Figure (cartoon, rainbow, N blue to C red):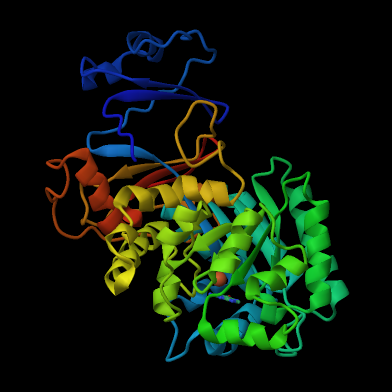
Length: 467
Ligand code: GUN
Ligand code: FE
């Protein structure tokens, strides 16, 4: 369910939500011109003696604050390939489009450009936390960490471990040992570069067909060693029928795809499994037992023709689920696109025989995009909602002028990294917004909103994007 506070204040200090007040209609807009302390007193806050005096931000009519969106699965390195699939499905798509692009990011200048554009676009769409895959190259992976740190997004940065003979010779780790050592080095790099812990490394065996048993075992050991630090692991599982058949052939000693990861100690409460479309009942039991999270990537699954996840079954089983854009298997960095796709795919699944109860509601989709993602990434109770004690990762959503394009000049926000983005104003002011109930406004935003609706983005209380 979604709690809507029509009139209220949220106090944030040092990036943490200190108080949330629900108010009556006695508050009027002219109150916003009062001196901050007077206004706070009128609003009933006890502590009005802060020094320096608090900054007050009044949210315009028809705007609303929402918890920042959480992308539990995105390949920053694939950003230039958005929308390019040809006639391929997963395995051919990887070889034809994905690996050549990723391999080209050993060029540090290109890597920085690609990652900067991807992370900026992600932030502009309201994503405050994202779990990224970079490339096989440690150097290129560390560049992604630098970009995240400089742009202010919360995130996890994974170097793709991939030492299997199946990988092309021009794009793979040289040995199981180097696959593990390079992963450890990237995790250590983040720890060193960002003491705040906002940007962290994540163990990333690309997927079973890309990895040797030795590499997976080594990464499982790293994961166990990182337990105290809350180190996470991410990979792909059961995305495509051909992939599932390939894993069966490559690992005949294992009874299932999930077991391949399990025997190498890669299934833990800190593991994020992307896709999980074709898991058997036994595998779901195992995933549940190990308390792994699942990243549901419906945009990607539709675009690559991978299949339709029966999401309701996982939710009913109590498996943690969040949403992933899976750029560039997914064609959009916007988590809202994944959220509405989750609604649409669930309708297809329901129609396909799983029944009405399989449909995902607007509120559930938004829960998956926020709280669900936080659970999957081990950030429950920290981000994903507005509660006292949680971190101020938030977006300001405004839809009063949509579908009128806005002037957008994010350049100043990004230390000169970005190019000036100017969008032309088209058309006049439209009565798009304002007459509906708040539930309807939120539904409208979910189904038809885009980056133009995201007017400001905060991470850890810091304004990282404003339009
Ligand atoms: N499986 C292994 N690598 C990838 C990837 O880059 N994208 C997707 N969607 N699936 C994968
Ligand atoms: Fe992926």
